Amino acid sequence: MTHPIPASIDAVQDLLAAQSYVCGRALATVTFLALKLGRPLFLEGEAGTGKTEIAKSIAAALGRRLIRLQCYEGLDAASAVYEWNFAAQMVAIRAAEAGGTATDLQTRLFGPDYLIERPLLQAMRDQPGGPPVLLIDEIDRTDEPFEAFLLEALSDFQVTIPELGTIKAAEPPIVILTSNRTREVHDALKRRCLYHWVDYPDFPRETAILRARVPEAAESLSREVVAFVQRLRTEDLFKKPGVAETIDWAKCLLALDVLTLSPEVIADTLGAILKYQDDIQRLQGSEARKILDEAKKSLTPA
Image 1 (cartoon, one colour):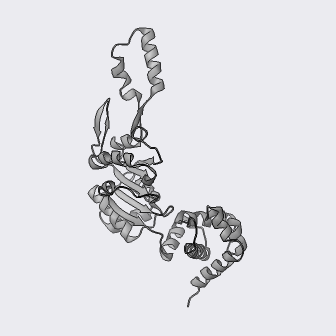
Image 2: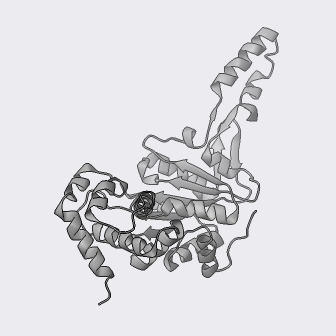
Image 3: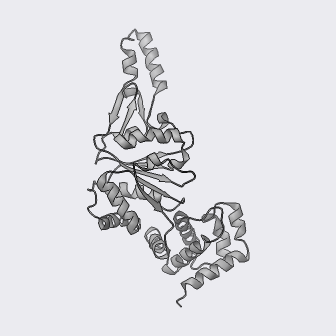
């Protein structure tokens, strides 16, 4: 079922909350403005802080199709926009030659029947329920030539196919770009977007996120988990755990029927929150106990 664009910042928060996405006021504001003004939204921040998830939540909340372009090094326009079905074209050529029906074959070969649409082209097409949500995920993994190519798509919401011409969206898609800031994205691309830095949440909001995403976890365990992870982020780690890791860890603890954190439980489940062996090694032995003691102490009323 399709829903209209929210009419206020509070409505954005309520809409996302219905999808179990706990959204702070600043992020709700820039999201409301992006939806209201039809501007792309550029979300930057550490991995695992909910940037990709907000695009999924917006699509689900509005009843729109989510089209995801996962970026990677070497991504080019052909992979992002379209390609021709070469195998089917070759079959058609051979069939035409055998049957003596090669007239106007080139026109037919480069028509819609042989066109494979990739995410950017799909996003320019009319979709049931209204314009889709186009998620351009981890744009920092691509290179500058692809960024330059995106300028046309994000400025005019159109793409050009040499054999077919320019295809322009009748109504612009909702565009969300994310970056983990492994490199700086060019200013020309950022200028076309509304920008927001998605930071790690504070204790109350991360607790609310965990309550929304893992409602079956006891409140006492949820608070211990969040307190431990937040204390862990102050350590000198190669990769600090994001909110995604907090959620994963809580689910693992529930699967093990854990009621309260202990050094032994932490040692057994560190792989749910830390993804590098050096970081895991650092927390072996007394270090995990020390961080746990400090986390539990922070939960004790003064």
